Image 1: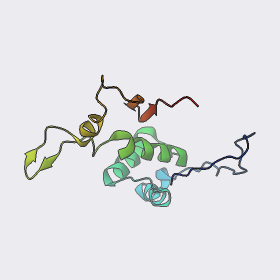
Image 2: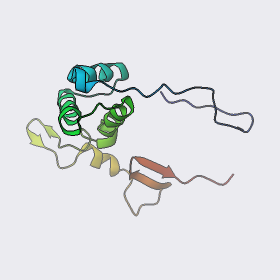
Image 3: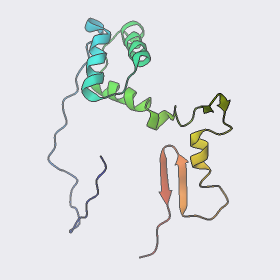
Image 4: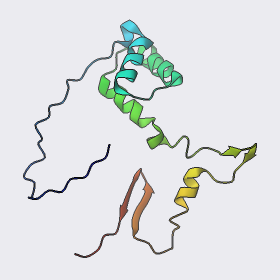
Length: 135
């Protein structure tokens, strides 16, 4: 959920008093895929069956160790639609006909290069920046 807040006075610190949860080890070596399924459900990591099988095998057979919850969260974020653009970057086939552009290409086309606009950085490394105005 995105929020916006107006600060009446200048901030002197970003400390909000919150404390981080301790890092946990996810017992894949002992419990297998069930341990990964549990954290996937608890933290809403978005792993599908392929991911669950792949990461269970990776840690159990190849790396020979349990992952931390931080690693699991990072894997979930790294392979998310937001980061990878699986859906928006994929081929579109409608009524059996493949479309010439992906959804992502159509969105990017709204800011063509060489056309004046206030965009400084767009669609670069999942970030963007716009030109502001003089106060």
